[in-house]
Figure 1: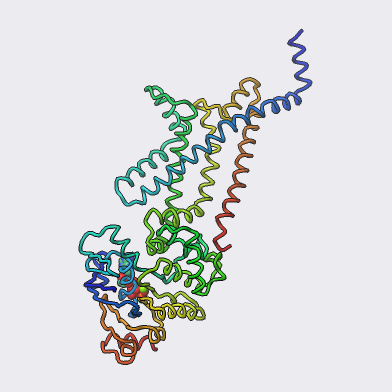
Figure 2: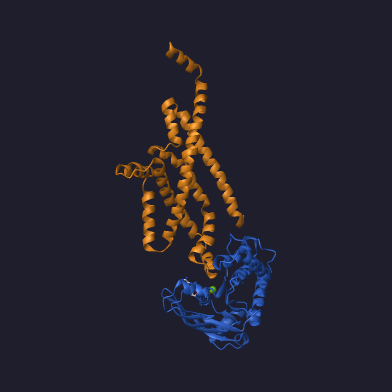
Length: 245
Length: 235
Ligand SMILES: Nc1ncnc2c1ncn2[C@@H]1O[C@H](COP(=O)(O)OP(=O)(O)OP(=O)(O)O)[C@@H](O)[C@H]1O
Ligand SMILES: [Mg+2]
């Protein structure tokens, strides 16, 4: 469903992704771990073409893009249509209410009628537990609530895969659970997800596969239990030791 | 007999004469404001804002030619006196056969002026919106134009209201310069009445008073708009 071939990404002379290969089947949940600066965020941003990789191929749900060639706005839009993004800092639109945030994509991008988009948005917000906060502005919501609006906003575009970049890292500890709960529910419903996170329990419970990234490479991958309990790579061992300290 | 009589009369009624002139001049001055000062301000500011947004977008486009055009425009307008700009548009162009009536000439001058100054305000306001807002919009597949219109400009507007209000209020007062290119706006009216009555202190003070009232009303509007746009920020 999603396939990445030999993906490279440079910031100027700094090569941040050094040839990523990855296939993800529909409905799978992949958790990405790795030290700071290893390229986790950059990988997700490349999948959403918020960064343009220097070379490599990407295919999501039969939409192909080859970054070695000249890419057009249409190519980018086709890929973005398949992916949703949930940001570490939520990035809700502050001038719009929770409901308007969720409706923005369907109405502005998909040109849906407001009357038609509204019930769907209400349904999504209810699903993430915010059915009673429709008309709240982001500043009136807690971090956990904002992040759940962020998830609903991504879902509203019916993406094939949702990319989560440390969705709970900016949250107070007591709010982490409510967001992870929503993500878990999504996973159970069969949503394909790529999640960068340090929440090892979430990875253990929910992930089908864990990837360990370091220095722009995927150094190890496997079932969460295997990677966490019997890491093969030295760097993975070091990283997991640091985390458990 | 008449001149003597007149003198006595005016001496006896110096204060009344003052009140009389103030009263009889008030309506012509107000008319100057209503027919010229206010329309000139409103029209020039509206056009100026459109120019400003375009100029700001040119500068932010990253396209060299467009950025260059914007820079040259801003540099010329900011680097030369408004009065001189008005003279060039009205007298200068007029002398080479491009005759523009006073009022449209004033509109052109003040619009160009507002456009240059306000573009810097708008550019700064756009730049002040966090990058994450662009990315969130792109992530739901919005185009550059949609992002600008639906996400960035609404937020930039809020940021730019206080400095834009300053420009607007300055413009109200600057329109008095249009008197020099024969626009029958309020200040020119007051000059004409001074020429007949020889009461500069009275008339110019009266004009100043009306300018102040106009600006005061505008500042009330500013408060209203700010309150409206601040509804989505923590207070
Ligand atoms: N816009 C940018 N310009 C230049 N360098 C960048 C940019 N974004 C990221 N980098 C660099 O790319 C490398 C990978 O960054 P990235 O954000 O992908 O790491 P990460 O694995 O997400 O780290 P963290 O766990 O701290 O979020 C880092 O060395 C970073 O400094
Ligand atoms: Mg990161």
